[in-house]
Length: 236
Image (cartoon, rainbow, N blue to C red; front, side, top):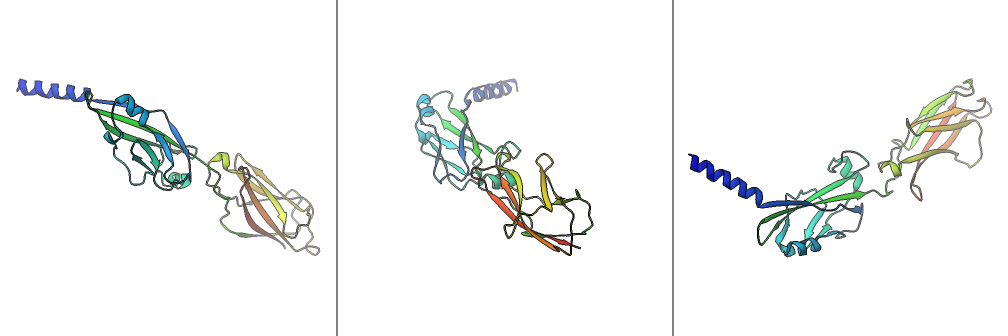
């Protein structure tokens, strides 16, 4: 019994010394990069370990993972859509600012330690590829002509699935026919993300009974992407 226990302890000691792991320096790639783009070149690492690229293989590769290991390189094997990975919660990091992956490779060495584990962190950078969208392309508001100046009405805000650096920056209200109007304005609070329509002048239904605007959402891209909603205000 003691002899078996001794052998078991020695086995675990030898096994623990036979595996060494290393976390490599993080690398990054932009979303929507071309397929087969090289993300990391591991050949210099293999040279220091005195092994060939074929002695390494991906460990526990996920079907949803957009990367592959081929002959010393980590490459992009499928479309990398950051917003889709964030939505499906397939990114490490747990928030909209980060979309990180970690690839783990096992390397068969020619001497002790015989197993070498490499962890390659990969960060996916966002690009401004999403257009702000309203839930409806048209909206209508009914407003009494005797509302006081300064009266406020909440408006629907658009949704931009890009990360906050490319999120919605501001809104603009434009008339359909291009003429200037002074009856209404909008104010946007970027902290609370609340958008409001403000009555600036006294309304007169007998003079104008309907206003039609383009409500435009503008993001922080360079150049910015815009989303549009047709906003109709009928005076009652």
